[in-house]
Image 1 (cartoon, one colour):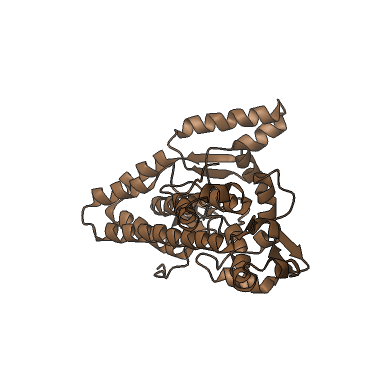
Image 2 (image 1 turned 60 degrees about the vertical axis):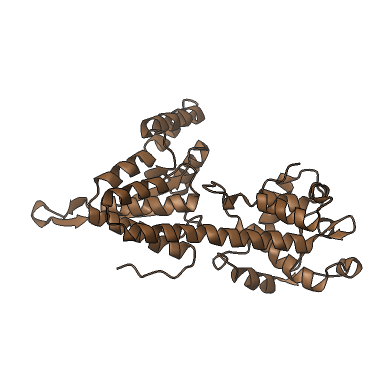
Length: 362
């Protein structure tokens, strides 16, 4: 089996120069970590999976301090207290908002899905205490816990470098005086291969500034109308349990969901989550919105098998399709002031997402 990540290969070669590949082949834990670390690649679509990785790392961190190469003693160990592990990984980079799902079930479920041949859970849950199964800590007589910690620590370091690169890019953009260049650089950030959370933040900044230039009129009578600009709000952090709503618009009450093309079933699930309230889908694709809409409608018809009630339920719930094409078009239509607002908004929400210091939005 080929080692996927370059930095994983380098660490294994450094520590096991003569048999690094054999060690990797015999360790499901090393293989699992390697598979979970695609997010550091440039323009990676992969999620960071910090919850799963940090759940493992928190146990490994204390294990290597207490039980490294102490096989017999570890077999008698009952596990580390939940709060000790939870508090530890919440203090790690990007871990402050993580919950306990990874410790309690998510890691074991995913681990079994990736390695059908294994029998034992990776994490043993023992009445509020947690430990790693000894089968995954040793390759024959070699305790691999310290190597796993090195790999995870390097992954965190590379993620931090990647995160800071966007901050530096935004700082450079803020200093530019040519607005055509600013527009071009924002457009370059919009990519089918961009990380999901980055795309969500950038698309929000563009949509927020696009819609704030549009006025609507409200009132209980023709003599009582008042003017108001559209306002877009982000419901929370990316990957949050938001019930299918990423952005909400006032005062007209529109829902926006950011997604990818790869699974139309997920679109229907998002519609179900909000009880078939119309949704605008913001999609990370260069494919035209007409093609996406046509494909989605055909998928709905296929799922409905001629049932009119199902067809109408989902067709009426698609308010609008917005792709990278529309986002780029609106960038080029916006004023210079709006372009500066976009750069500022990306910076604010990205720093909030990454738990960096941010200037309060005014």
